[in-house]
Image 1 (tube, protein in one colour):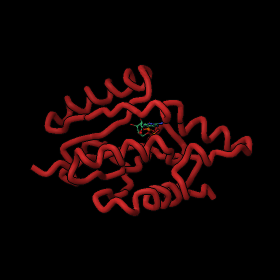
Image 2: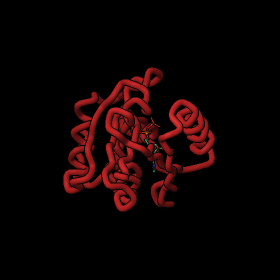
Image 3: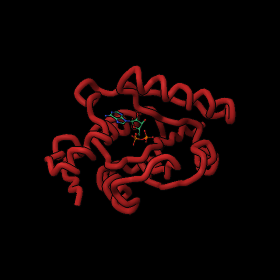
Image 4: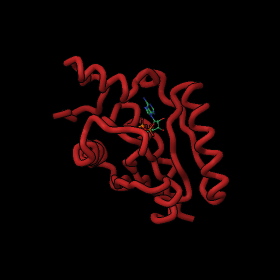
Length: 153
Ligand code: ADP
C-alpha cells in the first residue's frame, strides 16, 4: 500500500517547525501533501498565494512533497488524494489536548485514516506562527524562526 500523508495547517506563515516535521516525516511516507486549509475560525495575516509560494520554495528540493490548498474537511481532502494518514506536529501538552480531539473525531468520521503525531525537535518547540505574526506586527526580525531563504515580503 502506498503511504500518502496529508500535513494540514494554516502555515501563516511557515516556520522552521513545520519544515522540520515534513522533512523528518519524508522517510516514513511515500509522499506528503502539505495542505493549506482555509479555517472558518481564523483570518490569515498572509494571503494564500504567498503562504503557498513559501511552502513550495521550502520543499522545492523534495520531489515527494506537494503543496495544495483546500477548504473542505481534512478527511475529504485525504479521500480526494487517496491519503491514508494525517500528519500533525506536537509541541506541547496543549497541542496534544487540542489535536487528540480532532484526531478522535476524524477517526469516527473516517476510520480508514490514521492520524500520526510527530514530536517537535526541542529547538523548535517554542516556535508558533501566532507569535511570529505578533513580532512582524511590531516590526521585529523573524528570520531565525522561518526556513532559510524565505523572505516574508
Ligand atoms: P493549524 O492552524 O492547523 O494549527 P499550523 O499552521 O499552526 O496549523 O500548524 C500546522 C501543523 O504544524 C500542526 O500539526 C502543528 O501542530 C504543527 N506545528 C506548528 N508549529 C510547529 C513547530 N514549531 N514544530 C512542529 N510542528 C509545528
